[in-house]
Each structure stands twice: as structure tokens, then as C-alpha cells.
Length: 470
Ligand code: FAD
Ligand code: NAI
Image (cartoon, rainbow, N blue to C red; front, side):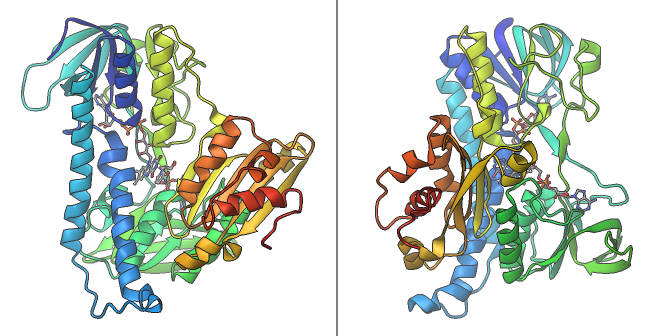
């Protein structure tokens, strides 16, 4: 189903691209979305956010049933793991959600073009369909690039997706490895490391820096480090992987301490390489179209997401910044609204980030470190979940809520949470920041009792040293 000419052609059907396509169609534009994968949803739905969260949930149930129900008086004896069923469930969740986007495209009259898109002129895209069909061209007033990112490679470590895995391979193992070395103590490393540790693997995280989750608030990093260790993860910080080689069923890694230069050999049944992601622009025809990229390969855009070539826009992972699905979505909406003559805008100061481990970690806004660097005066309020009644009832009380407010205006500058449902609780903080709230605004908001949200209120009260329950 293709027109001769569309108002907008979106290349890439991930969270950035599909949301932009739907919003543009809602605003009355004729829109086509070209996707080369067999299903819509991009990295996030197919091999990212969704399968990882499905496995995190399933592995959490397994761990609960194995170790944590007895204290509730629930005896689950001889708990066994059926990994095949767990994987099938994950695939069903992914399939249902990707098909849901096809439905949304139909509902909004977005033309779904299956194939690889290549820009051949500022208003023209060549489509190479998947199964031996002839190539053809589609034309558009505007083109939006939303081609996302791919796994960053590590020199000296070749990913084979059997023993040496990217996140994609680590989401599809058919056997629990006895040992897993994760290279990179970032978000993927901790989330997927948690899945396989819960299912029985001995997990070692090798991280180049002297901390996990670089970039998050220092208190969050410290707490997460403690929690991961307590759960049995072996952490090798300030350590560099020099090489990883497969020897039959095992992988041998040479790692070097950055503190004293000592080398050590690690052996594991599987290795996960999770050292970040890089922009994906292969075969897009950027050079031929004259679209500028930066030194790291990200497409350069202006404040309205337009590249240096008029009528060609870009959003999401491929332009850099936080590589998050919701950030890509917001940018997609902004481009569509700008094209429709509205004032599309993304507030980068209020984009949450969540790590879906247990406990969860969630952040929005400024960290203490960055405020100190800038010499901004601030006050901090903190409240532990151990003093929150609902967390106690739930039996999940590790962690805290931390609110950072401007010392003079009391405006909330950042909120950082480690603990149960941190990923849901952060939404209140994002809304508060979006509305320019003060910590007093949060403190004076009535929160239901008993609820985890009361910890957010108490942290806000603590900014003025008047928390009630501690
Ligand atoms: P993508 O989702 O990468 O989509 C780009 C699409 O473009 C792809 O489907 C690709 O096939 C297609 N494409 C590329 N080139 C062409 C072409 N020439 N023609 C046609 N199609 C093309 N983020 C979160 O916010 N929360 C999470 O919990 C989370 N978990 C993650 C877990 C993992 C394991 C990974 C790897 C990532 C996770 N992310 C998460 C990050 C998130 O997946 C990305 O930030 C998000 O998918 C970026 O969206 P995008 O639309 O920019 O690109
Ligand atoms: P990341 O940037 O979060 O972490 C990579 C880590 O690897 C860093 O701590 C870095 O210091 C370390 N590292 C780099 N080179 C190394 C080396 N040679 N040896 C050892 N350590 C090394 O990247 P990650 O975890 O791969 O995730 C990629 C992207 O996907 C992130 O930008 C993240 O935003 C997104 N994502 C988001 C999730 C979420 O929102 N819950 C979940 C998973 C991924």
C-alpha cells in the first residue's frame, strides 16, 4: 500500500519512528513508515525493553517461589525452572505488542512499508523489500530518520551469539549458563545479569570505571552496588577486559586491574558484551544525501530535529543523548507537531531513567555531583523505605527516596529513588518537575496510606528537616 507522494516518510519503526508516524497521521498528514525488520517496534519491543522486562518479571517469580515465599507462610517445595516456557511467554509478549503497533498503524491510516529504506534525494527514498521483490521509490515532502542504534563492539572480543553474546543473544539463551561474565556494569549489564543470576548462573560484572551505573546519583550507585553484591553478583570494578576467546564450551577472558595493572584470567560458560550502543545509519545513504554526522556517527540536528539538509529530520537513538525509548517517543511527537505548525518541544530536564533490577533504581533531573560542579546551592531530603509501612508489608524495604531542591527557590531539581516500584514512583517526581513544583508542593500533597508514594512525600518533608516517620 504505497502512495506516490506522502507528507512524511519515517525510516525505522521503533518507538521514535512509529510514534512520530501515528502522531503525524493524527494531525492529518499522509504518512508511511518503512521498517526493515519483520515486525514493528524496533530494538525496544523486539530485542530491548520488552523482552528484558518480560524475563525480569519471570525470573523474579522464580526467585520468589524458590527463596522468598516461605516467610509469608507459603510453602513452595521443589520449585523447578522451565526455561523453554519462560522464553515462549517472552516471545508471546513481544509478538502481541509488535502486532499491536500494526493495528495502530491501520487505525491511523499509516502506510506500513516492509523493507530497507535508503535516501536517494532529499524527498525520495528507495525501498528494498525483504523477499526478492523489486526495489521501488517513494516520495515525500519530509523524511524522518529514526533508525536507532546497534551494539557497540569491543576490540578483541568477537560476538558469536552462542557463547559471547550481545544483549540480543542474552535474551534468547536456551540453557542457564553455569557462569556468566558481563562486560559493562551499566543498565543492560545489571538487568540481564540479574535475570541469569536469579535463574542460577554465577554472574561476574567487569566494569571499566570505579562504579556501576556511571552518571546516576552517587547515593543510588552506592546502594545499587551493595544490593547487587548482596544478591551474589561478583563485581570487578576499575577492571578492563583485554581479550575474550572461546575455547570449546568455555570462554577465557584476560582482565586487567586499572588500580595495580595486575592481569587475571576468568573463565565462563557465557559472556555478555554490554558496553553501550552506537548509532545505526548503515545503508541509509546519508553521505550521498549530504546529511552531517558527528565524530561518533550520531546524526546532527538543530533544535527542531532538522538535519543540515532541509526536509530531512532525525530523532531517537540515532541522534544521541539518552538512549531511551520514551525520549525517542517524545522527540517523534515533537517533530510531527512542528511539521503540523504546532510547537513541539521536549523538556530534557525531566526525562526519567529507570533500571529495572531489584531494587529498581530511578532518576530524573540533576544529580548532586553535577550541581556541586556548577556551584548551585541545594538542599537534600531523604527517606528510607525501611520506615515506609507499605514497603514493610510487602517485605521489600531496601532503598530510599532522595529529593534535591534549590536552596533558595525550593524548586525540585532532581529526584533519585532506589527501592520497590521506583520506576513507577518516579512518575510523580517527573510530573512535579514538569510543573516546576517545589519540594513543599510535594510535601503538602496528600498521599494514600499505606503506600510506597508516602516515601516521596516524606523525602520532600525532609528537605526542611520535618519528616514525620523517621
Ligand atoms: P530503534 O528502536 O532502534 O528502532 C530503529 C528501527 O529502525 C529498527 O527496527 C531498525 O530495524 C530500523 N531500521 C534501521 N535502519 C533502517 C533502514 N535503513 N530502513 C528501514 N528500517 C531501518 N529503553 C528504555 O527506555 N527502557 C528500557 O527498559 C530499555 N531497555 C532496553 C533493553 C535492551 C536490552 C536494549 C538493547 C535497549 C533498551 N532500551 C530501553 C533502549 C531502547 O530500546 C532504545 O532507546 C529505543 O529502542 C530507541 O528507539 P529508536 O526508535 O530511536 O530506535
Ligand atoms: P551503558 O552505557 O549503560 O553501560 C555501559 C558500561 O560499560 C559503562 O558503565 C561503561 O563504563 C562500561 N564499559 C565501557 N567499555 C568497557 C570496557 N572495555 N570494559 C568494561 N566496561 C566497559 O550501556 P549498556 O548497558 O550497554 O546499555 C546501552 C543503552 O541501552 C543505554 O544507553 C541505556 O540507556 C539503554 N538501556 C536502557 C534500559 C532502561 O532504560 N532500563 C535498559 C537497557 C538498556
